[in-house]
Image (cartoon, rainbow, N blue to C red; front, side, top):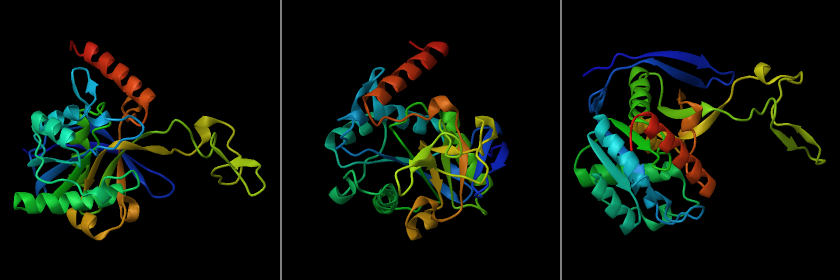
Length: 272
């Protein structure tokens, strides 16, 4: 099924483009350039919240929320989990994902780059599954507030702009603005605005728009992933999600906030 999608685009001063979804229908698992691979990354050595990827959240492991939604979306030809942990692998298999390889130890540390983890996941998935993919999608399991509509929206935006962009990433409204209420010390230690265009911005509403990088959905051309060194090396545009979906689990407070927001949504939707 082909999607009917309309977006409202905002081009920021540095050329970064953000899109807000206006209208959308469901996509099939076949992208513009063939099958889509979804990778859910989850290493076992979390320090901020030990065991966070399989911690119980409303009756199921955190990672299961993302896997089940990815499978239910109908977007993906394969949903694969990249992990170094047997416990995470077991939870992923229970939720319905494939775990056809283990992540190498050097890519399972707190200092390992996400982009390099993706590169390995793409190569290992294609080797293990015996096929190539036309679109690579990574979804962060530490943000269980994202919904299927967000997955579809980001992928739709990528498909609609594939000839002009290398990737799409989720962004959200920033809570602070470097032109207005973020400061940093200069060489003398005196505080200055983090960014300036000359005259001091005196009101929040007058500050240029900025966005937070939301741990969520990343959609990339496989060839771009294979040949680049980091996400923003090429042409990347943003898919904007609402403020209540911008949280991910980095510490205990994050978990409590996400648990509260998820419970509130489930109650509003009639869930138990």
